[in-house]
Length: 225
Image: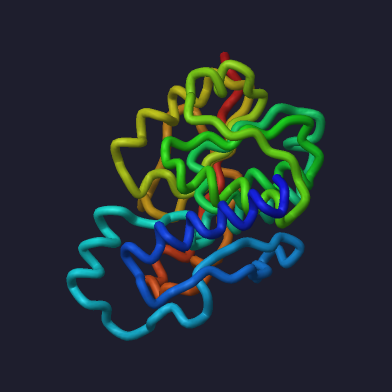
């Protein structure tokens, strides 16, 4: 990504963001749990007071997921950096990358190829911009089937806010391994997955969400019988 492409990408994201939050901008920030990763996220002036109902409705209709680094993304990124054996020399497909934090961590940890896959073009623009900021190479895709066909490892963080995504967990298992991080579904126990552990985190910038969303569980797919 050239510097001109970065400017164009950032301008496009600001234009998209200002449709729902006119007074807010993005700033490049180091993450609390993985300070070696810097992302373009909502700046510290994100309003803490109650938002106008019209703005809330606009956010819900077109949520800018990519302008936050969600709790599960932070935890899974930290996990990959601390356990690079999961990705080294492998093709990693990150599904629903949002800001791209997990895909970036996979590249930093030594993946031979990283594909960020999302239907949301804004998320892919944000992922490309953040990859350039962190000087890593990622591929972008909107074709999940093609991406899964070449995946050694699938990663996904906080994609289950929409329960319609639950069937994806079975589809992911066509890859050799899957790592899933979730903070949204209480008592999640997906078939074919085992719990690796639970960690505490929060969305960044901090949305002041309920503490129930601060507990992030990481699952790995079970080997095929």
